[in-house]
Length: 307
Image: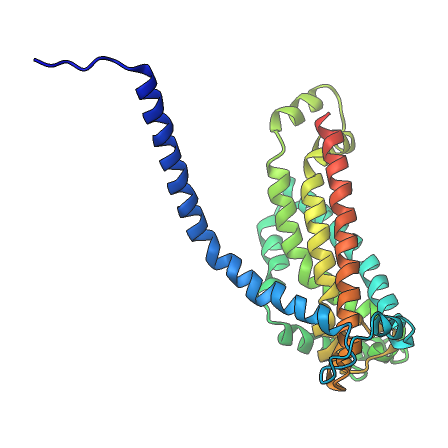
């Protein structure tokens, strides 16, 4: 009876060949799952973005003459664009910190042992299920010149305020933004707080650390990733407030509510493709810089926490 001699080199080659086949099979499966999403991103995101970038250096949509950075210079020197950019940055500077801080405070409150927190959590999540048009209708009923709020104020002898055509308009939109976004941010923070190791909290409590000390020394380092994520999402949502502003105040709202999206929407209505594309690229670059700064800060704070 014939016997096969054991050959270590042959066995090693078969194992290497088997590993290569397995890696190739995994790569084919991975590529098969990834390709549809990648094609969609390239077709519907990077493709239009590239077209917009090219058109921002052209004379107009119908004239492909290369004009360099003239469109960007004209947009930058445009007073309407500067006003819109200033209003957008001011609103984001107010809305984002408040959206993060208030959501964190609510999450800490609902993570403690208080009665009725499940009902309060449901109330805070309700705005997520309400369409934007319905929210705008509620705000029109509340803040129009003959609305409910002015009626209540009249009972106390207070003069009516034209909320959407005064300096109060920014506060009205800020309240709307917070009311719609706090619930989602709060849920994210509640999830992050529940992931904080209870052993460390109990140990600190036994050592005499009060609630404030436990928060800053133990909870906050674990919450940094969620804080930055909520901050980025709130920043993106603050740049999308145009929907509510447009439905409440139209194409040309009060000066304090004239946002970058209003500027670009008006340029689109007037078929001014040169200014529209240049403004879109400037806005995109600004968003990339801001988000990049946030990611750098997150990485440094995360590294300090690990150390």
